[in-house]
Image 1 (cartoon, rainbow, N blue to C red):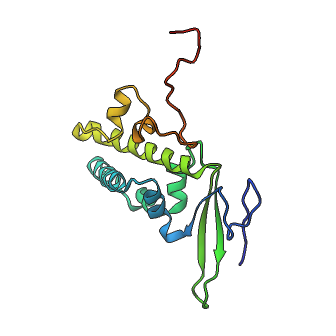
Image 2 (cartoon, rainbow, N blue to C red):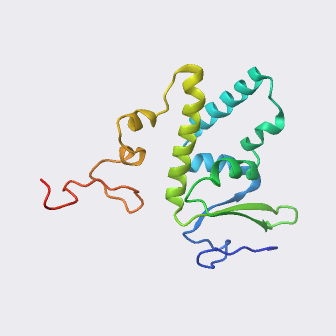
Image 3 (spheres, rainbow, N blue to C red):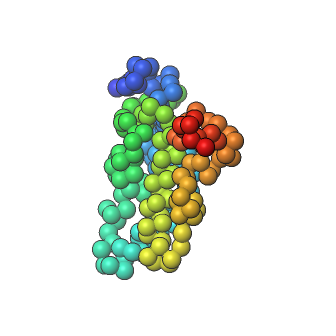
Length: 180
């Protein structure tokens, strides 16, 4: 292996994998896998189409404006880097079992990969909603929950389910025992 990378948190080799390696995939599959892991295939397709139509109507469409749909650095710059659970994007050359089967792999590092994919899902939901609302008056699947004053994560699981990766746990009892 040429240019083997190690986890910035625990020092484990990327090839071996650790809890901080959110994704290790060949470059050509990077955007597709990020979308799959965040479970936003439908929103992603609609988002790409709405952006394309918006740029075409404004006369500003150009192929390089769509780099984020397939190029890992453009996707990372636009969608991953602003996320608080994203740590770093790295590259590693991995060779295959036969000559000519190697390729560049893209590595995504995060302190908590599950939170990273949830956060990406929320970001893509918001992006889709911003493009959809003015154009068609549609709401994303997450918007009704936000409008009702609840956070998106707590509406995706049952209120009694307690997960360590859940950002905000629901409390049945008051925070201050003196309050009733």
